[in-house]
Length: 176
Image 1 (tube, rainbow, N blue to C red):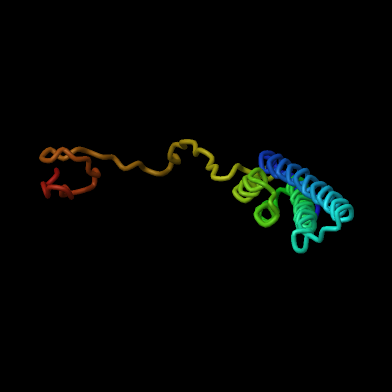
Image 2 (cartoon, rainbow, N blue to C red):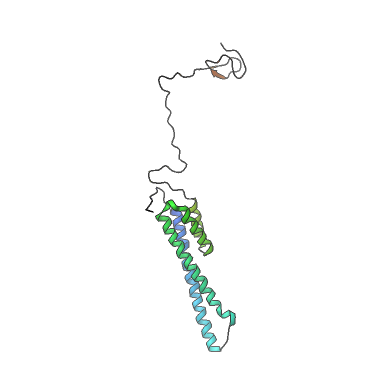
């Protein structure tokens, strides 16, 4: 599918999703770094003192695994934000993907809000009318050959009635 131009860009959705992906990326690198530090410290301590940590010795793998999951989902959020900017007419698809990966991948509140904004975004194609825009109709006088209905007022009830009416439709008074 080619590049689709719109008059209004989904800037807020793009920027928030991109920032959420970048913050998630930085958080994932921090988890991976803490996991690597924990691995090195636990192994040096275990080697020096000869202590077996059992199940707690695997805590570093949890940090690295969680960091890797965050890294993958954050990269996907950044890619989907770029796709949203490049192809805003498919905002529903990219917004849903950003929303899902911000939830399952700890992309943060910024990516979550960016996904929601992408879902509710209303694109205006180049040369098109804005969403919900109805052009105002100009008053045009009636054509020359068409006679206008002349109205008069009922003397009994005071309501407006057509000139050709014999009896008032509101009070029943006979009109001359």
